[in-house]
Length: 191
Image (cartoon, rainbow, N blue to C red; front, side, top):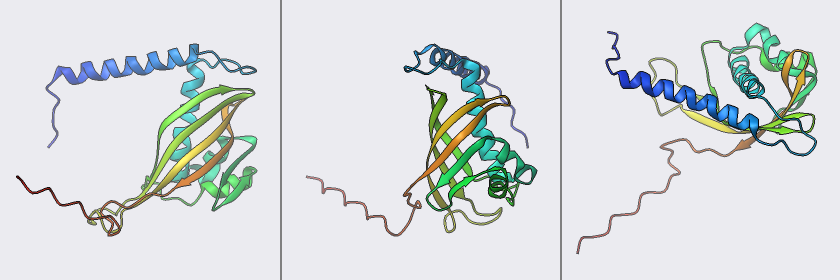
């Protein structure tokens, strides 16, 4: 059964949140750029954010047989990670982006910071990758989160903003409820 929203406050909050996002982007676009860097416009910030969103979608779905992922990188762009090494060139990036299950989203990018830099822009974002249980499986046993952060260099090309480089820096993450967690301290006795 579908639930109807009966509170007009929900819509007011949504509108206020949208206005706040636009205001923050506009204010960031007015921030002074570092020496040797051109200021970014609000449209630049939005396009770079969309680049990161498309990256997650391309990696999670294998869209276009990996072509979507490759198209997000500048012609001389590269992806780097400790486990995969340096992946560059169209064919290697296509291979990285293909063979995914389109119904299995797992990569979530948050706290995306974008700053002007000489030659384009740089960015930092946290990434959480979660192996979710299949439909009908009980949560908990096979829930395995991993993640870290992306360190990006963006370049404005004729096709728009693209990754000049994207480096994955892993972080250690614990599985919620894991046996390795210390037991809680006992509550002090009442006096």
